[in-house]
Every structure is written in structure tokens, then in C-alpha cells.
Image 1 (cartoon, rainbow, N blue to C red):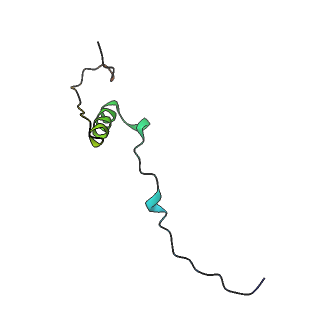
Image 2: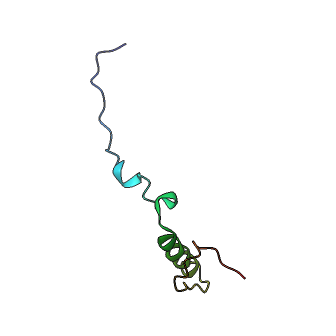
Image 3: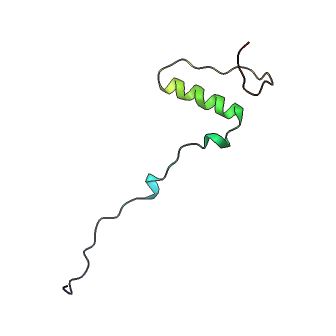
Length: 61
């Protein structure tokens, strides 16, 4: 083992790599519906939201 000084390396921005994805479990049903619509639209698909019906997000007949 020599007595050489440690070599410095370039810094890494760890904050930029933190996960900034939304917490889906913390979203309200309305927020989740809008999130999914925006996701579909970002993928080039058609998306829409509907008026509130009080069915807790259950769609269908």
C-alpha cells in the first residue's frame, strides 16, 4: 500500500435520478381516471373522462 492521495472523481447528481413517478395508491379515483386518460393520450390513443356518477369508478352496465 502506497501513501498516494485518493483520486477525485466527477460528482454524480443523485437527486435527478430519484423516482418521481406518481403514487397511484395515493390518488383519488378522480385523479386516477384523469391520469389514465393522460397516459392513453400520451401513447397516441383516444382518452376521455366521464361525469361523476357516484359509482366509485365502476364502469359498465
